[in-house]
Image (cartoon, rainbow, N blue to C red):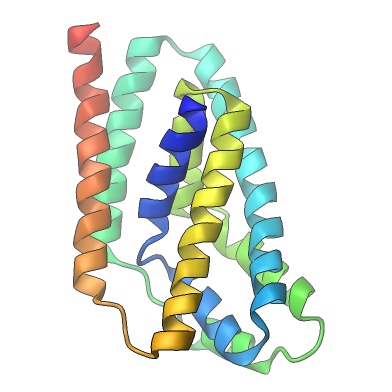
Length: 189
């Protein structure tokens, strides 16, 4: 359960302000919410299953101290990446708007491709090096889907823009916090 909760919180924070949230909002303004969330869930499940598999392989091959330092540096990098921000390109926004048939397939494919190499994928890999693969997989998937669902609900029903600065700084702070903890962990072990 520890792996589940840690992964859920970390990936939820990582997803805040991410371009895939903007993509989710774009799809949800054009299509029904359930096919959009289903597509997000399918794509996230597949990408994060691959990520935890990769994380387990890396985790089994490297010593614990090296993993902790590498994960800490990675999380500090995620904090900087979050501050830099992601934007939905005009091309990506146009694809979401033009897709009227096969919504589930389109959303799943778009999210799968956008998540490959994304910070949430790398965060999941880092988490899987330290925690159980199953809890990390389920927790990271739930964290991402909940973050995207929250964006859709707020975007659709409130119609207001999220305060991006606050989201960006909050997520970056969470990454930096976890990064420092991971870097300091070998000193107190």
